Image (cartoon, rainbow, N blue to C red; front, side, top):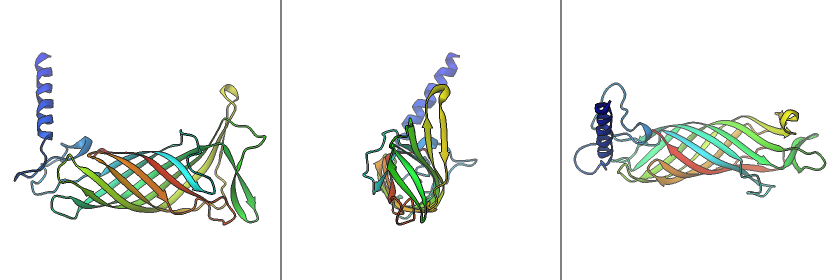
Length: 246
C-alpha cells in the first residue's frame, strides 16, 4: 500500500514538472491544454503538430435582456449554461492566432417579476407588471443551438493570456415561461410554450478574455426575442465565466 502511494506521488510530481514546459526552445511540446492535457488518443502525438486550445468550453452565465425593459433589474439567480464544441484552427506559427469554429448549445434562464401576455390581432407578446395575480417564481427559459465562429489571439506558451472575439448564428429550439404558484403540497408549476411570435433565428456577438483555461465571457443577441413590432422588444445578453477543459 505504501509503495502504491509513493508511486502515485512520484507520478504526480513528474506530471507537475512536465506541465511547466512553456514551448520555449527547440523541442516541440506534446502537451495538450486543459483537463485532458496528457490525452493523445491511441497513438502518441506527432512532434510537429501544433498545440490546440479551447476545444470544449463551458460558459456559466448570468442572463438578462435589454430593450423596452431596463437591464439588471431581474433576479440574480438568472443562471444559464452554454456548451461549446470547437475546432481550433491555427493561423500562425506557434498558434498565436487561430480560428475557432464549432457547434454550441445555449440554455438561458431569466427570472423576473413580470407576466407575459399574448394578443391575437396582431399575434404579439407583451411583458407587463403583475397586478393581482401572485406567484412565487416566474422564469423565461430557452434552449438554442448555434454555430459559433471566433478569431482567437493568445501567447505562444501554454500559460497564456487569451482574447476571443466572434459571432454565432443558430436556431431557437424552444422558449417557455415557467411560473410557480404556492409552495409545499400546494406547489403548482405551469409551463407556457405558446409565444405566437417567437423568433426562431438567433445571431449575435461574443467575447472571451482570460488566462489559460479561464476567461470572462459576454454574449449579445442582435435579434429580438419576439418578431412582431407591437410586442415588447427584448434582446438577450449573457455575462459569465468560461472554463476550457480540452
